[in-house]
Amino acid sequence: MNKIGEIVESTSTEFTAECYELHELPALGSLVKVTAVEMEIFGIVCQSGTAGIEPGRHPVARGKDEASEEAVYQSSPQLMKLLRSEFQVLVVGHIINGKTYQYLPSKPAHIHAFVQACSPEDIKQFSQSFDFLNIMLNNRLQIPTEELVAAGLREMSKAHADPHAFLIAAGKSLTVIFSGDYHRLKTILARLKQ
Image 1 (cartoon, rainbow, N blue to C red):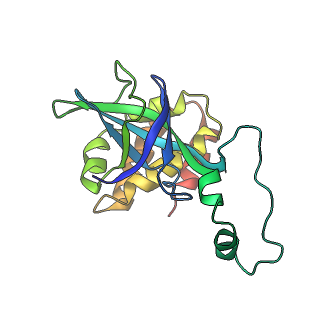
Image 2: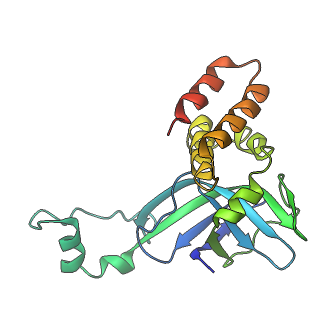
């Protein structure tokens, strides 16, 4: 199991996970999964960051007299315990009994459930259809939706034998979705270039 974090907040549409290792965040647009008793829940990493563990208490600069970032952590080892890296995930589908559904599951993921990086096989299976794009495009996110869609498709394309063909197929699906919004379509297609 490739555990990359643990859920600390969860709703029907998204969840937040804390990384086990500081700064070991999955890439924007990465497909991740949570295995529950009755299903696997899939999501796209839509935000990430590192901050202090105490709300309202911000980290302060410590490297004035240090030669590197690594030296800052070596001279202040307590920082590893005072900071945390978290990432937010937009839920885009689930699998029950081996069948993939690209819509929201009936229940949210559990707090303390393990978040795993998806294998190339998981990604290929999940991305056989582009129905998940509708969930991504119809959510209010902290980042521009077009950026997340492009990042997600670029990340997924890496798991396919022919990344270019995958992106062409995704572009065709986006053309149908954005038939009346050329500007948004053009924005996403421009960002799909590798």
